[in-house]
Image (tube, rainbow, N blue to C red; front, top):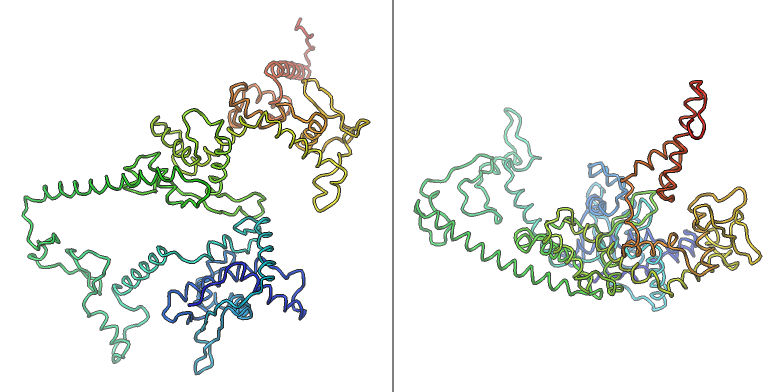
Length: 593
């Protein structure tokens, strides 16, 4: 069977085909490179190669358009399927034909439609071809374009389009030996279940009353009366067998007394206790062997580095060994580790990256190992070893609030690595110099051109500048730095904070601690500041003051406790005077006399 083309070779061949269409005027020149068309051809060609690998005719696939539509439908989440195979074929066969024609023009396959005596389409024959020769210049251009797509959309090439094929690399990669074995086993089980169907074929009906039997009805009767088929996936020592018509047949008493013990001797009634003890002892030896193997694999994983791939199954098993013990891993594998999300695209119309626990773990491990000098006492130097150390600490402390699932442990390691980075780099002169350089570049006059000019360049019009062209900064009543502004003022407090940060970086080359998030994190980690409060733990004083004044709790969080109490006293006094005025009572003086 011919080998499948690589991503670069396929993109080069598709670009060759689309360039011809551009020259003929069938396609706009701006659509020479189409990521969605490339992903569709890549995933569907990989599906055809899997069909050919599972067949018996080498690189030839004999199927139908109805089966092709049903096979490639899972690749396209935007396809609407009704469940009617012929209606689904009529709805989506044009898209499949278009891709087959494109791959034919790229000389990657040949296909034709077989007709019956009534000139109706009966089958579709596809023949996979070897990859044609591609020039080196085409490969270089295709590789550069593929790198540009990966830099823009990520290595998974997941775009915000709702009709894209998500995770195309996972669909396009060839099946592993284990996956082929699993699919073959499932196919054999499905065939065995179909043979054990109690009523045979559901499409053959009995003849009408008084009508002579036909060949089809005779076949139905034969299916009902033939002996049951033995399945290779069921035990040979069953005491009850099911006939093909659904009724149960009890074995003979002397045969039911026998067990599959290897000797064929009937068991004595008093020997079952000894046999149970022997079976439990034999299983215990097997469980102990699995525990030693799982523990050894967990130690191997703790020494892995970023230079290799980390199988998710090994990560889950090692976490179970560390968090729940080797016994749990020996009995149930990595089930207790919970799910690990891989390359999940975000919901539509949400501009944030999708969740990927595996990539989060790799970034957290890299960050942990870069800042290992700031690791807590007792933690190992390796990132994966630190992940397992978190599980061991939670298990020894018997703390139910600790991470139970691997996904939560990955989040805990990510936060730990961020705190380590803050401790290691908060006071770094190099970091402050890079901050100042980026702020100067954002506010320089040369940054007012280009496609990102709307995001940077110059100071906004609502900022008052001094003689040096820098924003004027003053100290407000809370002894904090604030910008001197003019009407109409900043659009939002977030934009004002960003401009203030850039102004202080350009003017002084550093930021005060209240504007430097990394410095705040380091101060909280050292114990110099109180830990940050969660949004759910609202202060009653702040809640009452927000209700009386209409200010948001986030704005009130910037005041000290003394200032908040003074503001609350004034707000309460104003509320009392307002109530007295409405009742017609005389207002009391400031001292209440």
